[in-house]
Length: 308
Ligand SMILES: [Zn+2]
Image 1 (tube, protein in one colour):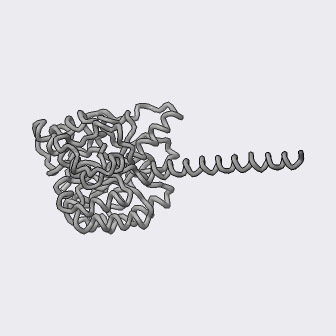
Image 2 (cartoon, rainbow, N blue to C red):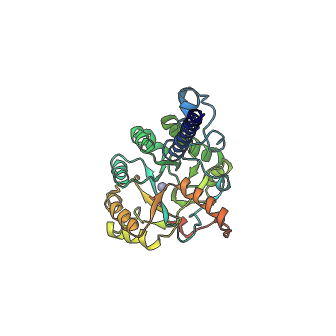
Image 3 (cartoon, helix red, strand yellow):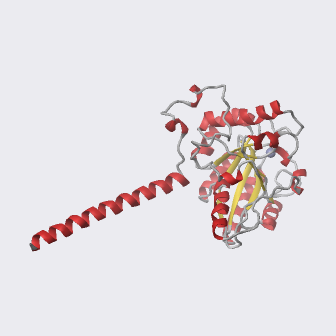
């Protein structure tokens, strides 16, 4: 009788142990998968190369049913214009964003700095530059950063719907073909909201990502110290920092970046991608009923600051 009870005890204990271990490893897998290892679309599609998909269908943010990647954003932000995330003042997180790349030299330098600091950022890519430097784009994606759409030509001028569609869809397509990533974020060149691009991007459910913190690295004046001062002047929880890794010589950005990161870390800030930032706002709103999180005004002081 005693032996039987001991045996039962051992059996139940073993089963519990196995169940707990499985559950923990599953949780670990899911978390890791969500944060670091997005599902690759070629895997989802049975290792079918994206090139072999129907080429007549553009890859846009519209069909996000399968987009379980780190690019996925909460539905409430689709088709909206966002300058920052509204977070409690105690949530000291910000998102670093880099525009106009990939550049032949500065992008990999930026990637090295981010890697040394274990930071994931968001890169708004220019399609034409992607076609020139495909390996760098693969590196950005492989290293866990988020890819956003910054049009094919980086034009500021007014354009008709067909041109706007081409600017955005060509860029989305080349990013997808190279990396399997479906972009959900759009940043209008120069911050222009009324030249036709944003209207089209909204119709495709992209989140229009502006910024709240301007480094000024696309301006001709100012040394690295000025960039550092600019970023730190406007930093706040939920902020989005605008920097550039392409569109010209960005050695000042490369020089300023390690100091910016060190200073903000010293202030207690953590660095997240834009989708992570938006997700945090959604989570925070469940806890605190905050004022409207989305800035819907059409104009913003930043819109006159042009990128180079
Ligand atoms: Zn730009």
